[in-house]
Length: 373
Image (cartoon, rainbow, N blue to C red; front, side):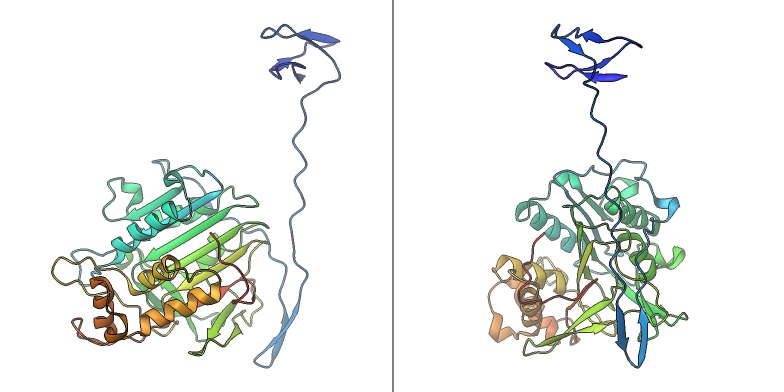
């Protein structure tokens, strides 16, 4: 039996039948009856009570969220040992440029670098708790392939405990594919496009939900920032915030008519996305030697840096305002000017219809709920 030394707390092996033992470190005598404390019994899993919902002339009960594990084949860390969690904060940041392809993007890797800088310097995420996947990485397990993105998502939620703050950021192509189960209001699943999507396929929102949303236990918070086309409901969350240009909003019910559970196991998930499901997100034009960024990531970071990140409503409103502003209204930095040129169909040669979206596992007052990472 193991006992702790009564003076220096060194673990000691008590011989069978012995009434006391002398510590070889401090020489104190420990009497039997001071066994090492057993670990506390974990609390039972949290299951919110079922609630009746009515939407679009149908009623159903949301079943309690079962603790769904991540796909077994990815339920482990990549062989190269990604960073360990520290300080109860973890992040996965993905930026894909699709270099040397007909689908190349210019701002996505810069988005990833800017997001990491903000998390480290403003929100105190330790660099060792951030897993970056871009084409610039030399580690083959940090190249944003479908396999590596799946492993990174699983790593993000593994071992999470109450109080943890998780971030999932993606900048790259997004798409849609026909849904045949009836779980999507518009009839389409949203998808992420890994670097090798043309040969390995896309990652569907159902899998993203099952991997990083449904397993989250009580007390864990996940923020997703998705800068991609067709990204409004990329995490398949049950509620979407519909906000008009005056700032008025309502929560739209996106729970599947089949009754499939798309919420969490008690945790909290909030997602900012670049556009609605039927819209496209812009990549800011790069002229001369100026660095380009994604419009949504740029607007999100600007909202935080300009002190407009007090609540979720203020962030969403600021992001939409930034993307709508004209060149005359903004002025200022060259990057901002490039963004405006793209919005107005300038150097990029196209206009942009893009409205950032907010979705969550549970509705809340967007103007009173404080934003925090």
